[in-house]
Image (cartoon, rainbow, N blue to C red):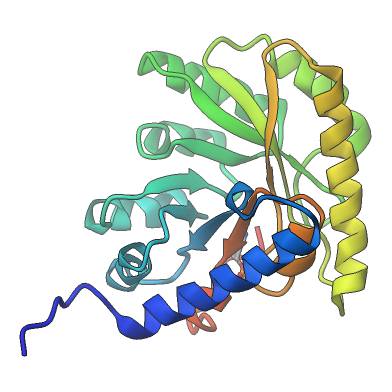
Length: 242
Ligand SMILES: *Cc1c(COP(=O)(O)O)cnc(C)c1O
């Protein structure tokens, strides 16, 4: 039998199942199911397996590490790529020409370097500001009270466009607990959106991973970032959860 090798029936069913759950969560919250995008988080996953997810219809990839992106980039089937890991300023140059958004902007210094490198290429980079919603020492990101000043500063950068916020809330035992953090994030997001700041869009709220994407969608997430739920448990030691 002639078979298209790039299509993996198990992956297709799996993605379908996740999409149904995402749609149900959106419906419960009275949201348009099309307002939430599914991102495949690729860390430690070989390009060949990532491509099965792309072939199954996942159009957005999330990359954690500049080095890993460089190694896998040219082996990927066509997809949109966002950078979602902690990004050192000296690595910005190697990612700006490969991604359409940097979601993990956690300092003004990083935003300034993205501005510089995007300017060199004559382009504008979409970014999200990362918020440390659980105020954890182990995580990067702005505290809520630092956002107004950061937005003000970033809005003056010609080659950077703020599109919204990203967060990795603390690990919780259940949906109700994680729901509280997502609810706080949604409130911060809507408060900023209501201010209609110059050069600042609040279109994207990236939050929710394999363990908690349902409460994230119920609380306004527009991008959920799934690794384990799509590809299974990572066998190789991955980077920490950011
Ligand atoms: C690893 C990672 C994810 C996905 O985590 P899973 O629990 O495997 O779904 C999402 N976002 C970021 C920033 C990550 O580093």
